Amino acid sequence: MLGAVGVSLTLTACGGGARSAEANKERANRDLLSRSLQLFKDAPSVRVSTKAAVAMGGLVEISVDREKNCSVVAQNEVFRVRIERGGRAWMTWSDAYLNAGFSKDGPELFKGLHGKWLELSQDGKIRKSMVDTCALPPVHEIADKMAAPGKGAYRDAEVTEEGERLTPLRQGDRGNSVTVFAKADGKPYVRKIVVDMPTVAPEPIEFLIPAYGEPVTVTPPRASETVRSTHLEALAEKNLATGLSRT
Image (cartoon, rainbow, N blue to C red; front, side):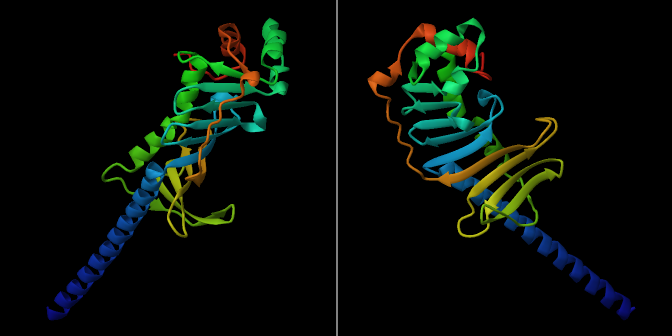
């Protein structure tokens, strides 16, 4: 009888130790995820790259600071946007894109916008869409949901990208998950967020965050480089702003 009791006590202690170790691991993962996401939220500025409808599914790079200065550059310089402290905004398109031909409006658009910045009206659809893009709503929504009280994370195998060691912190099952890749050395800055959820998109969506704290200086284009035209802006909304929100 004493022997049986002794075995029972030993097994209980081992089970308790395993549960305690597992709880400590879960807590460490949760704390690391929380620290990583908080660094993103507290950053004075961030630079984010992702594929976007406003670039016809191409890569766009968005640099934005707390003062709402913002710069957007599309892959292959298809377009550039400057937004000054959330106020005045300008957009320019590459000659190659202007030359692509957009129905009967193509020649007029090329003539009016070749080598120019179009100053966007405050209530224009393009400006509203780009201001929304600069606010990074999907990234902030993901960060808020992942950092919600009681949310934990699985720590997947470490990876190395761009010479940096990254710790993947995953919520959800593989194939239906959101994963934050945090720097493994130094402060655990978020370097990448991958949304792998078929209910959201057929292919995984990646948000790359290569830089924090860079100055985002928006210099208004020179007057000689600037066009102000409600007519050209209407044509640009119709022909050049693929993926533009119509709300």
